[in-house]
Length: 507
Image 1: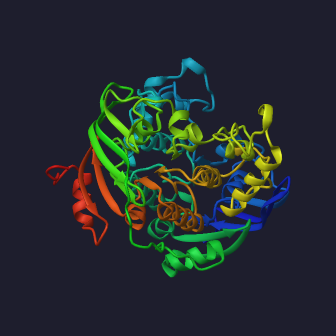
Image 2: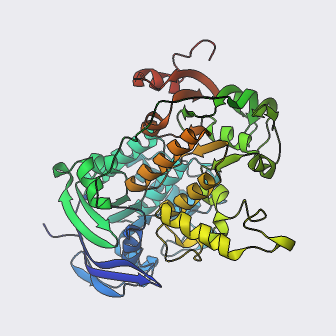
């Protein structure tokens, strides 16, 4: 079978960085081909070269047997290549239909035959089980729904090859299952799919073949039926990876965080937290398990002072912090790894050094007399943290925007943990990072717990909750519906509570 895509000896460099070095990749018709690698391994760069967003320094690209040179994404789309980026390229204030048909050949702006396009869009969506509302505003959609819009948009442009960059990074387990069913259906009808990911279980579940990149070079291409997670992890990082973190028994101390009957309303005026209560002690990790969208985001943000509760109290070491400003709460010893690193974690156009010092720049030893910054101390801290957390960047003075998503996440985690907080709010702490970095971040969170910090871990990855937590609390519709120690927990029981079934009395 002739490949639909052949990239031969692709090399792409940036100042100080070789992103791709002599990369050769072949994708077959009707194949789901995973592109696997650590953060910064060159996966997204290679696909941006294919999509016409970057020009390669060397190498050739053949699509459907013809040599191609794409000068822009428009050229790639015209040839039949679609790309769904990790951060979606949709216009929030426009409708789903507008986003799908915008920029089509013969674009006549407001003079589109909207009824015709609407019917065709719904026909494609229905054929592949992609539930969308063409009249809804994109800004009102869940992340999963926005991704469905992106897929329909690519299909409507008659894509023959679909590139998906970290497509499950912000999806719930249910949405991931639905996405994989869609991808398999698309592949069965002849579409080729390139899946950029670092999640080993997903590669084995959905891909036919996998190409592993490390430091910008191809390490190996193999059939997934001949692979397992251990093998793929070692190919990715070049060493053996420990999937289960080493953790000594928990030794809880005094109460650090006490939440009593907190009520928070979301932007639509509905109760996101509905009388939630919990207690967290020093030297323990309390994992909050639940399906995404059940109040986890609001729980972290109300503790951090980013939103104010309607009622209820929040105590930090016995001191009332309810409704106080974020800086005051930070200064009292709260670290916050936020769910959305772009909105809450980083200033994307600041350098890595500036981002690392965001919350401490006005304190010693970073700030001296007369408010002058001690640039040497700040630079040394940044270099040390970037090295310890294995952040792949040319140097500490590049902007956060230039890093891959996983490396951006490492910067946030490094900053928050380096401050040695009394209370660490870790919300999706390993979202978008590779298996080697997950191992390291998990070890740092456990170290914080062993140091005596109280850790509130919020994650939609149940495997992460089970790996790190000393206690598990299940959240459903803004309430803690059950709590249990993490000693041979009943996964079925947790799953039922996550679905709102089997609520415990007194929880």
